[in-house]
Image (tube, rainbow, N blue to C red; front, side, top):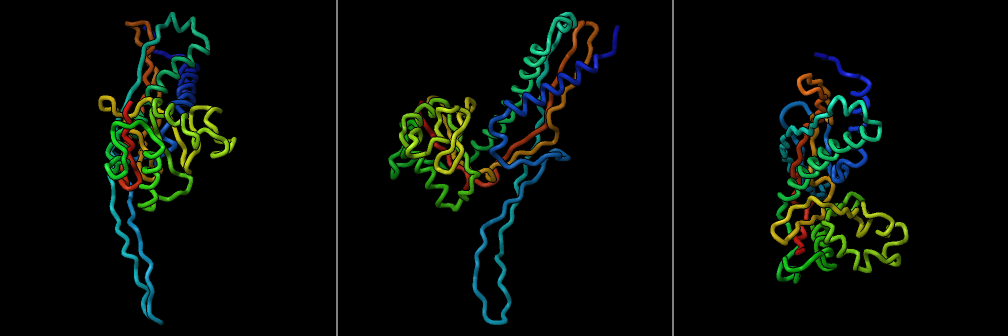
Length: 277
């Protein structure tokens, strides 16, 4: 029984997995606050409160802001994506087939990363609905609901610094395409038109992203308008790929794994938009 593994195969497969994960694996990881190389079962994200500027008397002591500090603990979780590759099939595969197998594992781990981020977003309590605003669960993603969420972020002084994001379902993306403000060059300019690609676009100072994995309760889909620093993402281990030979199966078992976690850092920086589909 052979215990050796073709190292060229292993290295190529690992490279393909990393490339696929970085290119197409996770859509939401770049939109949140992330820490890498964590040691231990959890890490802590610091949350700093709002400071207040005051005056002082001549030659007096400068008053301190008395900033409120708090910590949010983020627990790490281990995730795996493995599959078998028959030795005789391996002899027949070419680079394209290898890329397909690698991409499948990377995409599975990428979806898991986004699941962690969405679970953290689901912990938010602020919602762009209410009788006063006229927005209810019986509405889709309307212009008024989007503007209400935009207003709620502004009222809590969430920075409009280019790090705001909005993630919506594909049904809501289709509803956005019916809005002149979202699709007309006279409102957003030619560079930000959604027809040039559906991965993301800029509108209202935020990057809008369609996503298939947002939580839904019955016909109600939870979409989010948030700031990058409101969600924390921790990485103890980036994707690692292990390839082992099993003689009894005459096959390699390819296992890609990672250790990550996500948490809600600041509830004020997340607004949920509940939309009926």
